[in-house]
Image (cartoon, rainbow, N blue to C red; front, top):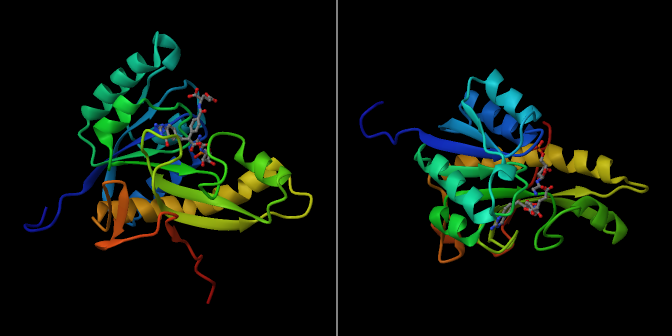
Length: 224
Ligand code: NHR
Ligand code: GAR
């Protein structure tokens, strides 16, 4: 490390499934678009594709099966211990499907981010795409936000929109939203690792300036 330079940040990624968002973070780290290393991938499920992605990138992975714990608190306590062992600067929820207890969140508040497949505050929780289609929404999207104890209620950092098409299906919309997720999540991870964003007293700062509660709006780069 060159003197005076900040050391590379350490990231822990939590997954439950396919891990395509994990892949976008892996790629961005490998391409030096994020100045960080992924110390570990933790899944609460066995045999998910995200674990194969971690293995392919030579990243250690750990499965912590929530069924093995009697209570949510016990699972979260163990999860927190394992995460703390890696002394991460940033913890990324990437399709992680377990609601986290207040005790867990409070241990890591300010360094815990999530990507949610809706334009928060619309549609917190599950089945976001079906709900957007049924409501007749013309736009959908994804939101990266700091995690607070309130489910999907933490302050937004960056949102991106996609169109809802005529006769859209939940799967088709989900795929369209995922492509934009893969753009905004590495962007936010890099901002965090560069120290450009942070949360203080529930307020997000970008380059030292307070941002709107809805977060910044991502504008895709047009082709030249
Ligand atoms: N925990 C806290 N405290 N705050 C948040 O904002 C969180 C969180 C944990 C996960 C991701 C979230 C999403 O982006 C997330 C945000 C799981 C559920 C859920 O209902 C809802 C939202 C999110 C993640 N999970 C069920 C549960 O009982 C299990 C569902 C399943 O296993 O399929 O935990 O959408
Ligand atoms: C993503 O769309 C993510 O926003 C969403 O699940 C998908 C995970 O895809 N997250 C949640 O719904 C969290 N409850 P991935 O595993 O391919 O990254």
